[in-house]
Amino acid sequence: MLQRYDISLDSEKNLLLIKEFAVLGRKSRYRNYSNSTGENYSFIHEESYKVDIIRKAISTGRESLITELRSDNFFPIHSCVKIIAEKVIELFEDNSDPFSEVFFNDRALFSKNDE
Image 1 (tube, rainbow, N blue to C red):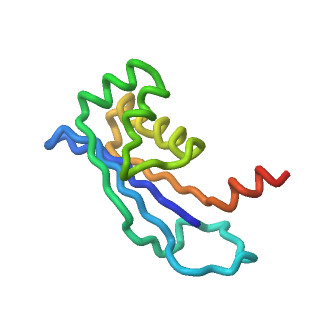
Image 2: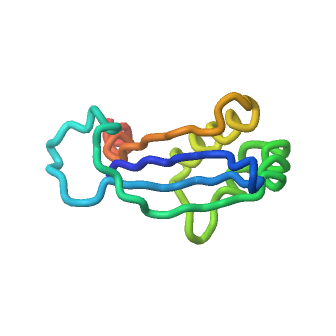
Image 3: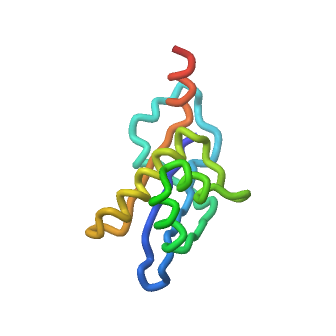
């Protein structure tokens, strides 16, 4: 499955927002997913976090941030949430752009494990 996460800082509300999207529908297993940005993504879920809580988690370490980002409703696999956490850290360190976009292809994860 192709997934996209939009990560943004809302400075007016003092929130970090993570929106989860996925390409829904059956696709041929032999299809090449080389261009994940050109797909039609459907909105799945949105999580919001208080900026102060995220800053504290970042100062404690990446694993603490991952624990804070995950919830009963939002629980990406570890290899994905590690990248999401890195993007969150980048957003907090670089104030120039309050938005980041992350793409994942589950097939790539399976093919790495098969090798």
